[in-house]
Every structure is written in structure tokens, then in C-alpha cells.
Image 1 (cartoon, helix red, strand yellow):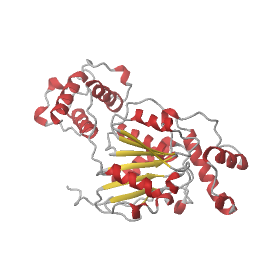
Image 2 (tube, rainbow, N blue to C red; image 1 turned 60 degrees about the vertical axis):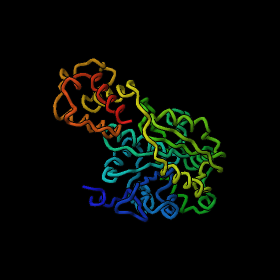
Image 3 (cartoon, rainbow, N blue to C red; image 1 turned 45 degrees about the horizontal axis):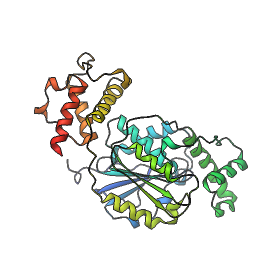
Image 4 (cartoon, one colour; image 1 turned 120 degrees about the vertical axis):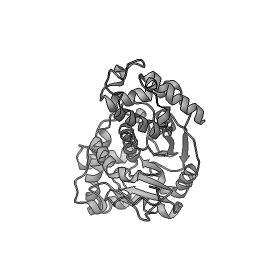
Length: 347
């Protein structure tokens, strides 16, 4: 079924799509910073091409979902996002996340990879230090009201004046901020194979906490190309120089970058991790390149089909059925040789 004839996914309260397109060229999923919902991205559909479907994330407990319980756990939030967004990942798409939103988007991409689901063409990590570069400041989500507000001001430049001058609005936003801070505090970075996703990092020249060095560290999280762009403004520069940010996004989305050629070592690492974690549900360190897959009970039509689907999604390489021979699948080393050979011929 072609994208044009495929029925559109059912609406979900998790996404605010002000100008939805039934068959967009690309979907841009926008993840909010702490305390926010879809509102920071309200005008974006007016400033981007009409064939880009801006899908602003709208978590429970905010905007028109105020009566729903807030998430305070990143793993639970990520699992729910996989469930809600999967129907919308049927074509090309990209992720944009600012501050906490970048961390949530990054964790989600890793989870999508674990499940063998399609990955975004590009990930815009905005106003956020790379996960491996996050500082270990003391947790403060449990602070009392005044100390919590003071800590927010110290770390992120404070709350808007109009919010502080409206007690009712302030009392409405504080529980949301506290829950989001708890989500951030619960993140634990684990080393994994870099993503096969292009990453573009954005930062504000006046942001005292997200340095250029911490932004540059995002380059360690990708096997693909990496770019970095600095904008004038503080931590919330996306609200200060929105036109410039969106121009950069437009430029990046129209750049048809091809995946970086993978080495045999990188291919072997990816395939070992996939077989160990997704098929055997174990640790990749327990597998050797020469481990006979037949002895592990996975050299069968079902698991072979799963592996071929993973290879197609991960590298854009389709392994023709008539090219598959049993001897090419007996070990991880043989499987790597098969995929590497097909990749080389594709170049």
C-alpha cells in the first residue's frame, strides 16, 4: 500500500497537530521543555513548508489534559510514547527536542531501535547537554515551594515575570515543573552503540549551563553526520530567535544526507547487540563473532526474517531472498560479511 493510499493513523491526545496533513512529506515531532506542552510549537506550522506535519507532543497533566496524572518516570514515559507514536512512524520523520525534550527524544530513539522500529531521519537536540555530558547537580524536585522556584531560577534563568506575577498561573505550573524535573533527575546514562541517525545540536550563546563543549558531545551519539549551530539568546533561545531556528531546521531537512559507510567492526557490533538483546534477551558480551547461531536455536525462518527486517530498517539494505544461503547466516561473522558486501555494492 502506497503512503498516499494508506489510511491516516487515528488521532491521539498525545499529539497536537494544528495543520495536519493526510500524506505529509515528513512529520516533525516536537518534544517540550520542562513545564511546557505543545504551546511553544503552536506557530511552527505557519513557518515551515506545508508538507511538513508539525506534531507537537502534549503530555498528560497540562493544557487540555490537566486532569490526567503527570508522568514522573522517564522509562514509563518512553514506553507510552512508543505506543502512542508508532502508528505515525510509517513515513519519513524527524525529532526536535528542547532541553528536557531532547533527553526524552534521545531515550525514545534508543527504545525504538531496541524494538526494531523505524528511526527518524534526523534528530535536533536543542538546548541540552549530551547525555554523557550531563552534570551531577543535586536533585531538587523534592524541595519546598520557594526553594524549588529559587533553584529553577538559578539553573534555568528563572520563570517568566508574568507567571510570577499571577499566583494562580504559578500554582498551576509548579506541579508540572516538579514532575518534569523528576523525570530529568531519574535519567541514568548507559553506554550503547551510537545511533544511525543524523544529529544536529542547537545551543544559545547566552545559555550559562549548556556549553558548546556539552553540545559537541552529541556527536559521540551518532554513527551518521553531526552538525552544531549556535544562536543568540539564553536557554530559551528557540522562543527568542524562532525564525532563525526554523530556517536552520528547513535547511537541514532539505539536505539529503546519506548514511555514513559502516565498517565491518561497526556492523558486527550492531548485529551482535541486536541478536543478543532482541532475540536472545541477553548481554552482547556473551556472544563471539564465531558463535554458531544454529546452536543458539535462532537459525530458523522466523528469526532470519526478523534479522533481515532489522538490517533493512537500520541500514536501508534489503537482503534478497535468493541471496540468503544457510552458510551466510551460521555465525555473526558470516552475517556481517553478507551485509557488508551488500552495502559495498550499494555505494
